[in-house]
Length: 634
Image 1 (tube, rainbow, N blue to C red):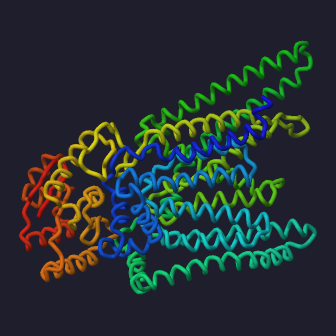
Image 2 (image 1 turned 180 degrees about the vertical axis):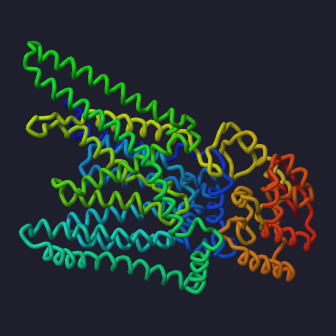
Image 3 (image 1 turned 120 degrees about the vertical axis):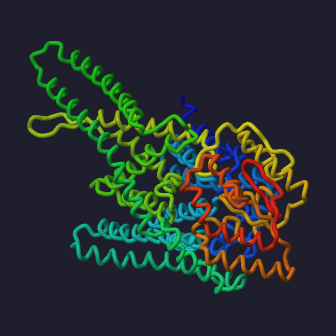
């Protein structure tokens, strides 16, 4: 026991935790293929540049694409497994940053920080290929840590570096602009410092002093921010020209005309609605805890007044034991009640297993953070930490059309802090007595409900993380088969049906030596550019709503002119089978696939697909390959 508390044992434990956090993100690098985001991003990394990428996407996520392109030049960087490993390292970095901050800066117990990071890693539903997400989280997390350290230690240079991180982050993903709201924490902390240093001064004087102090802090932050922005603009001007950059960003800002879910109002309202809807669960759990506290308190109060009983002490112990057992049973019963109301499921390849527990965990974080901010005994450092955690939860989801899912994907600072706050509540908050009747107020029931929920959250998170692998917005199931002869997919396991699709089209591409030929893809299959080693003729995912019809018309018109001038070879056209069937005039085949009339009509009325079919007709394309998933024209 003495050895376990020694510095040597703690160092061993520290290193063991770090090794696990480093390796844990690699658990699924060889499982599943995703026809959407994973291969789409990897195709952009391999074929980075204005020739094969949409300029809007290139510039709005420039640093993520540049880092991804660097990964493709490393050993194994042209394969799916290799890139999964390299991009997964950013997740390892995030876990390491969160762990070091929790254990060093906050002096948190190592095991609490470790389990918090395991929960955060397990809830990383998003494929690591989306570097614009994970690199954003790295810089955002670094900024939060630097702000905390800079403010609490009085090191202004750290505030400047925090500003640099935020400035760089808008070039990782342009929609990271709202992260500037972190400056609110700087101003609030300045006011708290002024209040602590001048307790007997008027509120007006404190606000004035806090304003001047905050202005000084802000100068350092803004200085770092502007430095990063100026350096990046200078580089982009030399490399591409600022006109091209601003044209790409202008298109990004205008895409909400077609992709309405990217409108700021839509994103914010969606997030607010999610939290409001889920107050249903929080209110009921809080009511169970409150009723338990009242019942427990009344029973204990009555027992303390039963002075006429000779065996009072013995009886009290028996009653307390019965109460503890009873509330243990009720807490477990609460979990059963949640399951019976579909609060979670045991289908761990689905988001249903973790989504509502995860949302409730985010709400618990914000509630506890508000309590820590308002508690009269909280230090200014703890108030700052609470404010930063609220901002991390809220700001992470802004700029994405994925509701609160991004916040669940970025719990590397939040999860350890929330578990830590909960542990301190369970360990330190004791029963007290209120009023002249000395009514007992015992939080034991609330602790039971809280521990039951945290246990549920941890179990569901870890099991979800051990099973779930992203594939077209759902999870991979039954990964048992492999594709042979395709170097990109070497060593990857997937379900047998998908393996058959990919084997057939990979063999076709190999036999006809089509690797390196430009391709036009359609039908939510952008990943095929990367998997088949065929660069996109203009955009690997033209059916995205954010890639508007006018831009596609311009790109295809340019492609037509280049073909007519014999500057480029005619691209291969690959479409998802449902689009190809209609092109071949086989509407009956679509009906037999089980597609309803409305969906068939959507395919028939798709102006982008009509543009591609007109292009194929004008250049005499012929159908040369077909299987259950893909059709190929040359």
